Length: 36
Image 1 (tube, rainbow, N blue to C red):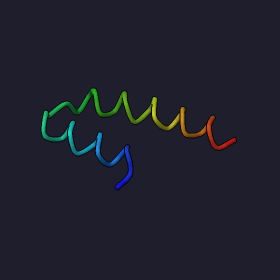
Image 2 (tube, one colour):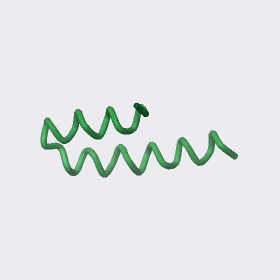
Image 3 (tube, rainbow, N blue to C red):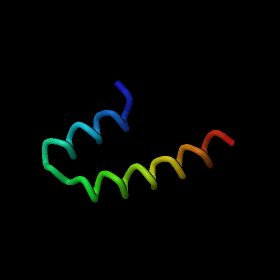
């Protein structure tokens, strides 16, 4: 299982939708810079 999936699942359990969006934005940016 991917780290982002784990984080997403954990945040879903916590009900942190805004936090989830923020982390997804940060994660996407980090992944984008890591892959390029």
